[in-house]
Length: 185
Length: 427
Image (cartoon, rainbow over all chains, first blue to last red; front, side, top):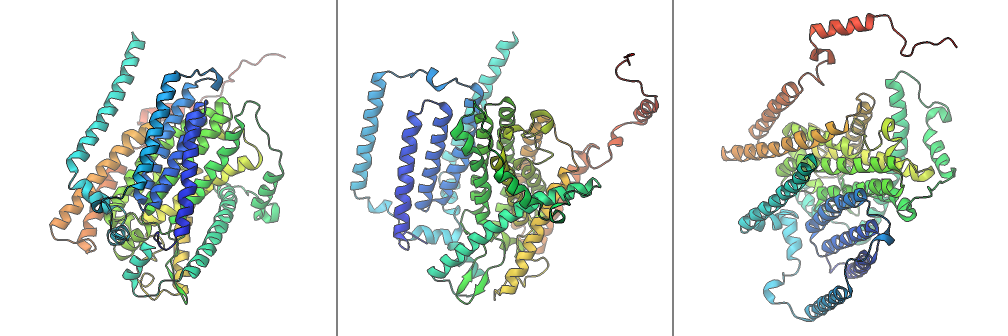
């Protein structure tokens, strides 16, 4: 089934997940309780994954759920629960009026940009031919079109990114260790 | 629909169904799978009690309809019982938690192919609910959401035992998810695809993965026990330490939902082991079931083969539950991170190198020397793992760890007349 076979189906799900994603994102930044905010963020991630699937990027959708919703947010929630940040009303708002205003302006600018992009015509080089992705999937499976460029053309960038992640892991271990030493003295 | 087309090319020409028939077939499959799944989960609670009774040499449930109607009686009891809510609970999340743990358990079944396609008069019917091209990744992604149910149940109950249970379970499930994902990478390497239908076909035309990738199967098996929170890894519940862990505060049907979710997860894990390592719906030693024409008989027989394999693993889950004691928590964590993860990583490297070497030597995948080579590597690896790393703990009897002096000392201790622990007082 491609977009052309079931237009109404796709349109309905696009708006459904889009509205839920935006509503969840708003709830995420407005909730005072950290756990509730984290859960709304999970919901946003999940809706974004559904959008990826609607765009025929099933692999990205699955990875979005697996990595963000299934791993990162679980650990996040874990930390929030263990820290036990106290009752929602005790948590003071960290940002002042100016920050809120600036954030609102940046949000409006991004929104304007989205509208501008939807109006603009994409250059021909960026548009895939009709059903090209579906044919590629039928030929090689859902992952090969992504894995090919990643492990051939962009191998160096990919490996350097993994070094970056390793650095983050080592950094986290070092920070954790230092606290231990201070307590021991 | 892409896998259907691919399968058609593989198995010979048949007609693709029209949209109306496809929709009708999907609805029928949906209802049938849901019914079988729920009935299966209910009957598994009975099976668990009957098998445990058999292993402990007692009768088990034998009153309500000679025991057969016990799940229905339990269900009715759970529906009519009073629901209790703790005062300090976060009510919306408290109510949401059982639902969140139940739904992923149900949804994962959608991508598992359970029988050979049925070539009906109106077109070919793929015996899987959603033949997604990302197949296995979908299962990993959705099952990783199941942990939310447990975490939120523990946190929202506002009970320290429940919180401890949920914290344990998060750490456990996140840790073993990694080992589970790593154990399946060799499977995907051999199949060259993540679609489960393709994995089943590859095994049917070549060799079952349990022979090619025995070590990966054992890693997956252990990880599956940890992911489903079953003994010997049921630390999130750990009755003797945490009351019942994350669902301590739950009552009636909400409590029951956690149990149904656990059994659904078991069914999915068993079906997954059958699919990834035991050829799925493939009937062994014959290609008759994999080739066209796809008749109804073939569909039924392959469904039987798949059910048999899945039920064997379900039995294995219960067998182990009533045989092995619970791990200690630090043992569980060090097993996951210090043993299973490095083992899985090393195994990926070994298998990938062997595949490349064999192909370099001119043995294509599917030829017997290729699979013999893989099988030999696994035989060696399994012997090394079980005999050397076991250190006389699991396979050999417990007494092999002790030398003769220790055994003599223990016998002397047990032969001594018993002294009361507390001095007996006169009153």
